[in-house]
Image 1 (cartoon, rainbow, N blue to C red):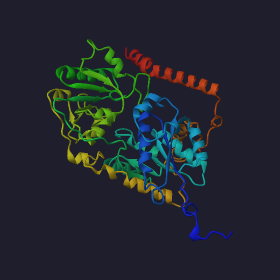
Image 2 (cartoon, one colour):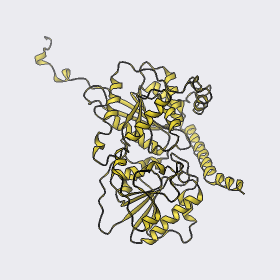
Image 3 (cartoon, helix red, strand yellow):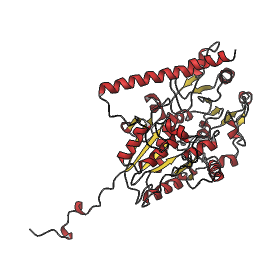
Image 4 (cartoon, rainbow, N blue to C red):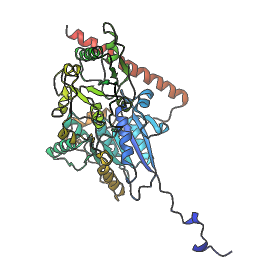
Amino acid sequence: MPPRTSDTADPADTAPAARPALRAAVLADSDTRWKWGALTARRLTAPGAGPGDGARPVEIDGLLLRGRATPTPRQLAEVGDVGVDTGRVREVTAVEFLHAVRDEGYDVLVLALVGGAVQAMLHGLAALRLPRRPVVVTGYVGVVYEKLADGLLLRHGADVVLANSRHDAERFRAVYEGVGADASAVTEAALPFLGGEPHRPEEGRTTVVFAAQPSVPASRADRTYLLRRLVEHARLHPDREVLLKLRSKPGEHTTHIEELPYQRLAECLPGGLPPNLRLVYGHMGEVLDRTDLLVTVSSTAALESLHRRVPTAVLSDLGVRETLGNHHFVGSGLITSWDRLDDGHLPRPDATWLAGQGVAADGSYASAYDTARARVSALLAADALPALAPYYTPASAPGYLPGILARHQLAPDGHPLPGAVAPREPGRVRGAVRETVRNAARGAYRHGVQRVAPVIRRMGEL
């Protein structure tokens, strides 16, 4: 039989080969950072985020860094749909993560971690000396109101350091340039979880939501004050639905430690809660769907609210202070007090301030990630990537860096410490025992933070 010619070729023989999937991994250490990291990975690997025509399929793995704030299944469920198959999410140690990067062939890594953990992973990745390393992306989950220089320098060395607004991008570059560090990685984007329909008030409905924060304010007196004022607002306005939006249940941890959960404080209130005030959990976006006034001290929820054009209030009752984070909203037109809110005041945001904050209420949100996506695409298309070069090295920060790396079982050169080799996959029984022991240890730690530590502090004040 004569060989087939092009005129008789099977179409299947001439079809272009399927392109290999673009593989990304998100390493996160809390529920909120998981939400930020997973949604960021989705935005960065959307069509156009790789060499070619953007038709490349995408696979995203979720890796949860084992620690005090590792999210529980309930917390992961409340984050909502982040576009990552739950079957591709697993818990790892820092060393197990590095082994996964070495073995899995990831193209993009999103480090959704506290600054020290980002720094440790950068040095650990550099020590792998991979023939072709992944593109490394990091950033912040929300408003950056404390430890600006510390957090930024710990993130230096990533290929892309995302800034959530023009305001943040300018500050980030100023810090890097001020210490002589390369600032080219700073890339303006926006918070990846903004969205939802614009606020539409309904006749006869007013829902007031107080967005609680785990660590702001910190003292029992201040947190009790805020709860009392919320209760008073509900009693002054019995026609309003008043919601206390909580981040976690007692015993769970989120990005910040919560020593005094509002749930516990509410149990001690004389007379309890009025019938029109409820404690709610769940996805913030779903709560904002029915919110007519968002009240907070300094939560990132304020930016989500502003994006939807929901009336938003930042409280001045406890002062406008750096320790509270509400100083970030100076100039916003949002700072007010419970007294004024009780009287019916609705703050109006300053347009100039809004324009610099990345909330994109003007409709520009659809293009907020274009620059970051183009940068990742260019890095993926490069013949080779330069070696990772964090600002901190054993020579430049010998009194600081080794301790950061040691917390993640890494030596000063980024290699795992002796005995820190990733364990083999445990059998079913051993795995169950390890999980039981780990859960018990977490429970003991959280009990110490939320119950024992406050008592010890009070005794020290006697």
